[in-house]
Amino acid sequence: MKIPEDLIPYTYKESKRVFENDLSVKEAAENMHKNCGININSSADYYYYFKYLKTGEGSCRILSSFTQEFYLKAMYDDYGREQLKKSLRHFKQLIVKFEGDKVGSKKLMWAIYTKYIDYV
Figure 1 (cartoon, rainbow, N blue to C red):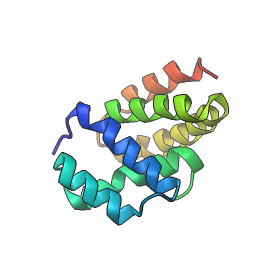
Figure 2 (spheres, rainbow, N blue to C red):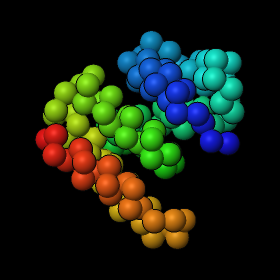
Figure 3 (tube, rainbow, N blue to C red):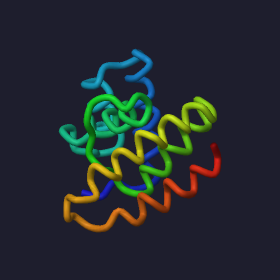
Figure 4 (tube, helix red, strand yellow):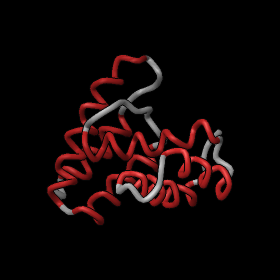
């Protein structure tokens, strides 16, 4: 199921709350399900993506290009230039990791990377 773009800011907010220990992954998933209709089993993917961009730790799924770009911009807005630099390094690793998966081109991901690398 494609998640409407207007719900992505909420997924970011909840993911950030989990990362900052204000909420558990389970609570955030339940909130996303209740408030956005996101499948409860898929809801945790947003936190794991946030955590991966922030720390480079763990694993995550590739989310929509809108979500990718929104999260990178929000990381920059919330945590500054140095964090964006780190997040872009992790994002690039993700692109390289998934380039050989034969599930579509990663051209959009490279375009997002190129756009944000100019910020740092």
